[in-house]
Length: 202
Image (cartoon, rainbow, N blue to C red; front, top):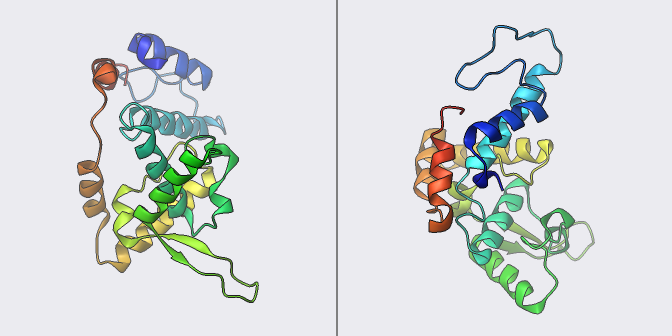
């Protein structure tokens, strides 16, 4: 829906909804009237920055087929930690991963086969069978994935940094690799997406 609005109209609405319109002006870091003593200002500014990042993220239905979106979503939740099969049926995922039909279940199984390894239960009840994100999948992890809670976002970032350190890689290596993995937007969205991405309001 945002792609149908003029960029300045959309940004004005966003700043108003996040209660930042009197503090932040498009094209300026802060308006002269900014009051840093407002205890919730930085939290709101962080939230709107995260929202804009997610809006401009290439890893979305604007560039993914449903099959690709299932794989991408599953990868993100496995980056938070190992998951049992039932945990991957998170109600927040709706049809992005948690699905009801046999066809969609086969799609999830195919995604898990592609991006994860499987550990059996220990047989004593202390450890259940779980899927683990494979080492070669961390370049596709997005710590700011839009379905993450704040705690999941932090955990995914911690796990990403730990995975990079274990492989002797730096964060800049991940940034370069993840950029190269970005999909191309579908033709129907590309013009509006680009107009929004380069508008002066941002």
